[in-house]
Amino acid sequence: MVALPAVDGRRSVYRVCAPADALPADLFRDAWHRHDESAFPRACDPFDTAETRREEPGPDPHTS
Image 1: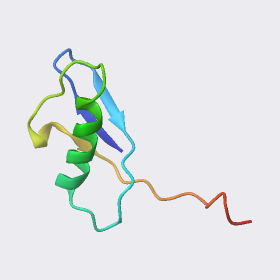
Image 2 (image 1 turned 120 degrees about the vertical axis):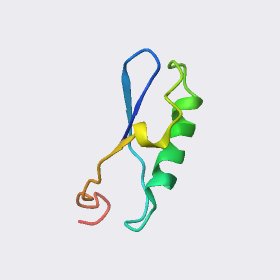
Image 3 (image 1 turned 180 degrees about the vertical axis):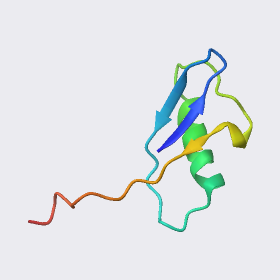
Image 4 (image 1 turned 90 degrees about the horizontal axis):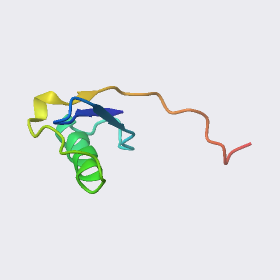
């Protein structure tokens, strides 16, 4: 999960699917592009404004 603060003071959170060894900058870039293409106010540009939280993958719903 990557949270990006926007210029209006709100924070938008994006789920970014990436391998466990993905670099934080790659996660930020993916979330940034999703935000930039939406109707939300502009997100803060600096990389260090993003908050990243890794989530453990849940069970695969396709394997039963």
